[in-house]
Length: 217
Image 1: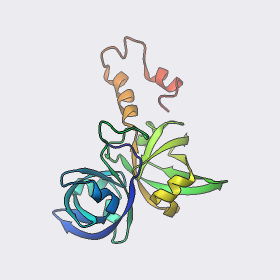
Image 2: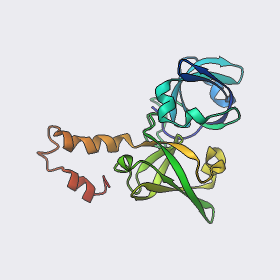
Image 3: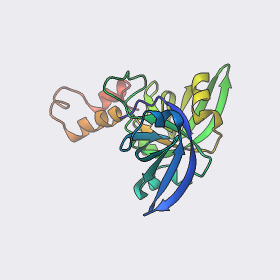
Image 4: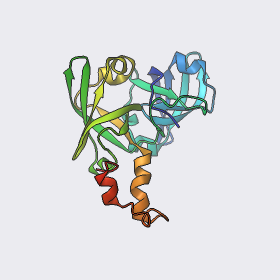
């Protein structure tokens, strides 16, 4: 479990195909300083496991399923990635609950600066947009963000200078692909009435109720 608050931007040092997946070595001095083998690490929003620590770098493996569902297959040596260590029970939850399980790959469709704020727009699968609502939470390349607008096929977010400077968003351009994870709470809320979960229907909570009150789009 993660929060979507990026701790460090690491750099891919080596990649090697292995068993249908890929072996990665990522340079990340800050993360490595407090990590051990077996720790979970979110890399651009993808939950991976640290298999080896050497100097200021760690090594990890991504399987074929991960390669198919994320942007990881396009990572090359020199690529910069957002990193976050797993949430501890005593940590503050400054972002939102992020699992590191990518739901789909989205595309940056534009950005517009208004003063010091930069508004990014993204396009994602229509089937995932049902979980995206204005002022709700979403993770883009592992970054916890707040949705400013949601419409058919896409959404936008507002990025402050700190986030631009301390994540890969400062380097993003239109057409770039990103890993997107929708809010896990929205998934459960949507499924409960449809599945006829005990209490959900009898209490009067329906899809129409959730939609009218901003829980669904």
